[in-house]
Amino acid sequence: MRKTKTKSMTETINQHIIMTETVNQHYDVSHSLDPMFADAARLVVETQCGSASWLQRQFEIGFNRANRLVEQLEAVGIIGADRKAKGREVLIQDSNILEQKLQELGV
Figure 1 (tube, rainbow, N blue to C red):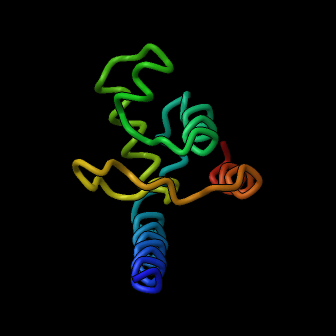
Figure 2 (cartoon, rainbow, N blue to C red):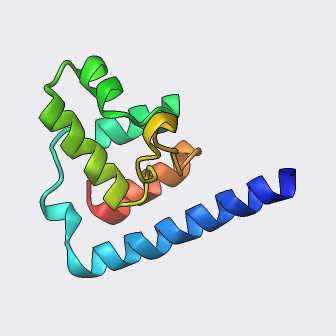
Figure 3 (cartoon, helix red, strand yellow):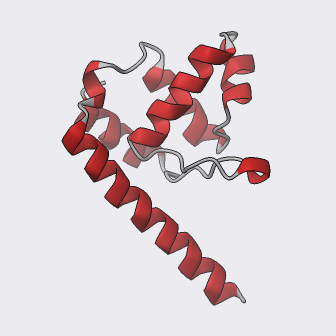
């Protein structure tokens, strides 16, 4: 049972890497990132919680802005796709890796 879960997680991460590469080829996310993007990314990785409602409460921002941040975090591969009741999986667990990612994005 454990092997299946690990394999599934690996497949999910690989799918997000492929999706992120595809998104980055067609859409330059660094030019349209929210000014709060880097702070949101750091909070998500630190707390391992990537929901719009969490960001909304932590930053005291509206739902639309929080949702845009979540979409941007997904587009660059920091969090996974919406899994409905299970919430979004945070794909980056290490803050050093996140900082490298932010540098690559020019944030």
